[in-house]
Image (cartoon, rainbow, N blue to C red; front, side, top):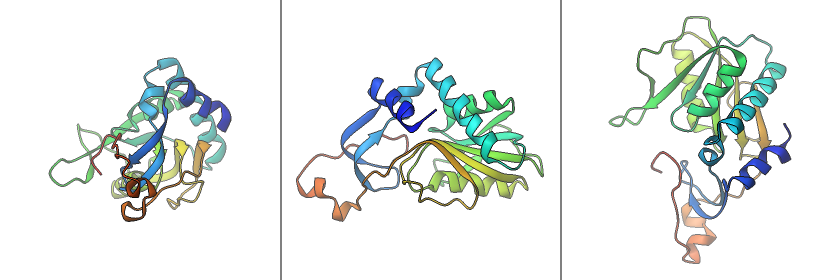
Length: 195
């Protein structure tokens, strides 16, 4: 699946938003990709999951035994990638009190298991890094990471190979340097986690 085909799904479903957005990272941006609006369609979710699984297989030197994704954004796409790879799927959750990610619900990784870390969108890589850390704390191997969208233009490093179905360079601004804030444009926080 090409960048153009992937982004076309976002356009067709109204998931490619334009305005003034506060991202999970706290940065502001004039563009936002709301993956949930694409992934609400099971056939599109399946298609994206298969394409991402294919890209992971081509780019990983190691077999993948398990897919691990952060909730909320990685839940659906992570499950679809795991289904396409025919492996287990685990997700991490943020503890409301400590705001740290953890494996819960009886999920665990076996020592030496090879994990693919899957996200819907990567901007700064913060959530994916947290998942990579959890995988390593469980004595498993984070061997590759993947996302539907890479908003960083390919610049984010997680210390392991990474693939994306579409790579974009989207402008982001610190709040105190945001031209939309200076213009008085109201900001919207569309993600699943408070900024």
